[in-house]
Image (cartoon, rainbow, N blue to C red; front, top):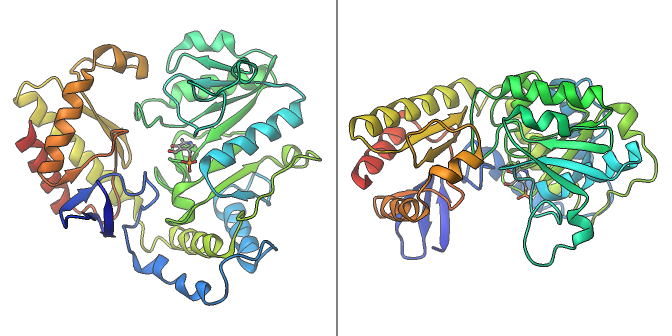
Length: 369
Ligand SMILES: Cc1ncc(COP(=O)(O)O)c(C=O)c1O
């Protein structure tokens, strides 16, 4: 499928087919495609799109992040162009600060296409050996969080298994990290400014040493950012630069999106939450009534259909129970019925997914069952 246009919660392919989009730029477009707020950055295009010298927006974005979102973190953030890059820098900072090399991540997590974080060809053994994968949502992971680790990286909510009941587990991981002098990196690339104004951190009351952002923070333009506690951010001689890092176009968009979050203007998190709950309630009733071994799980506006009626604890369970080919066939049929769910299966709702659109999605799913 090739997309030629996107507007509100709709995407249009090269054959002029219209689909309700549930990917929304992999979660980046929380207001909706082609929204008036971000269109205003055209003004910045007239002033140049790349300087590679600090621009006037960066300080404002730093100030907003510090004052309204993370007052306990350093007032300066590191900006880059993707979530992957933000995590790469976060890990580098953690290694530099702790003078240790090993990093632990969780099964089912996604932190971008970093060597060592992904498997497959081309990833050196030496890199793989520096990364440990821990079981997710399972207390067995706790004894593996030892002093030899520089950091543990975790998403507040995993896209592969988005769930609202994960708070106690996150707290156990946080406590274990503290106990063993291991830094906690909270990857809020997907959840930041999406689950709530304060991200997953706000919802679950987590206090990470380092936090990474992306997606929503760029308002639809490429961004990554990392923040850290002041004594960690002060670590000397850590390299962060890049040609397009903190470019004026992205930073203008970022300033606009943060401003609208602060003023509760274009984004109403309570609406995102209730509409998402409506989608889950209605669909779970439907799956039950139709005796389908399907359920929908989620947290805030991040949702996913799982192709089993068994309760799952983590991605490992999902993989055990799900029928992959059935899933593919279902999503293909759903597309024919006018709703697009991306290959990662994540359903991201935006402010444009009104109750009416939610019911359109439900009807298309019912038709596709
Ligand atoms: C939690 C999380 N971390 C990191 C990334 C990587 O971000 P990007 O695709 O911008 O490199 C993603 C992207 O989906 C993500 O969901």
